[in-house]
Length: 414
Image (cartoon, rainbow, N blue to C red; front, side, top):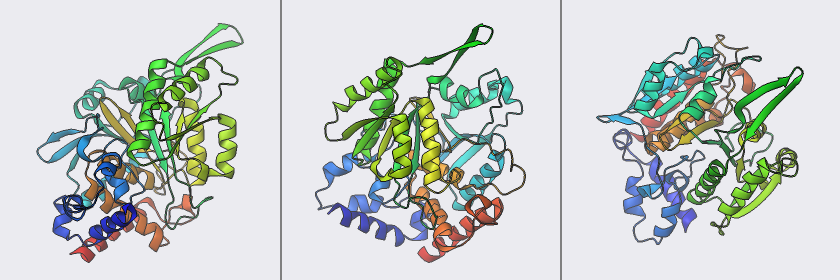
C-alpha cells in the first residue's frame, strides 16, 4: 500500500501545472486529497514528506505536521526567507554563483545576504556573527585551514560557536553517475562540536605535544538521540555506532555507552556498534550493510570522505549542520579545491543539492523537488559533466544545463 501511494505521489508531481508549482502547492493536494481513505495516518507521522515523494534527498529535520521539528527555520520577510551566504574560499564562490543562478531561475522565494571573509585567519567578523544570529540559516562555501595555522578555523568557529551539533551527509545512488557501488544509500550523522576538534593542545616539554579529545555525556546523548530520531522519521531500519572503544576505553567508551542507552529507547530500530577501522573496511567492500551511521567528530570526517567517494565523487553530495538555534548547509565534503579555483571547472552539484536540502528544511518541498529533478536529469539524460566526473564542461555550462532542464520541466507541465 505504501509503495502504491509513493508511486501515486510521484505521478501527481509530474502532472502538476506550472502555476501550481510556482505557488508552492505541490503534493499538499496528494496529502490532503489522494491519501484520504487510506490508512496511512500513523505511517505519515514518522515518515518525512521527501521520503513519501520518493526523493533521495531527505530533510535533516522536518516531517509533516511539525511533530518532531523542534529546530527553527530562517527569518522571514513577507513571503521571502533571509539566508546568510558565506561563499568561502577556493571553489566556494564559483559554486555559490551556480546555486544563486539556479535559485533565481526557479524563482525560489529566498534572499541571500552575502558576506565575504577576506581574512579568515582572523576569525569571524562581527557582521557575520550578527547575520547568522539574525537569519539563523547559512549557505556556506568551504574555508581552507592551512597546515601550521595556530588559530581556530572558520569551519569550527561556525559549527561550535552556533552549536550546530549534528552534521548530516546523505550518500545515495545518483542516476547516470558511474559509482563504485550503484546501491549505496548511507546517512552519516556526525557529532560536530567536540572530540579531537576541541583544539586543546599544548607542548608540555620540547618534542612532546598533548592533545585533548573531549567527549561529554551530554553531547554524546544528544547526537545519538538525533541519529535515532532521524532514522525513525525517515523510515530507516538500522543505526551503526562507530567507535574505537577497544583502545580509547574512556572517551569512545562513553560515546558508545551513550549510543547504547539511546538505542534502548528505540527497540524497533536495529542497533549495532563497529570499530572505525572495521567500518572503513566493510564500507569499501559491502556498503549496502550500512543505513544510518552515527560517528564522533574525527571519524565522521574520515568515513564521510570514504562514503562520498564510493558514491561517485566528493563533488556530488550535500551536507547539513543542524543545531537548536539554526542550520548551515554546504558540500558534504568540505574541500576548498584551491588547486582548481578560478579555472571555472568546479563541480557545483554538491552545493546545489545542499540548497535542495535547505529547501526541505524550510519545507519548500515543491521547489526542492523541482531543482533536484533538473540536476538528476542532467546526469541521467546528458553527458554534460565537469572534469572531476570525467567530462569537459565548465561550472557555468553545467549550471546552464540544470537551468535548461528546469525550463523543459516547466514547459512540459504547462
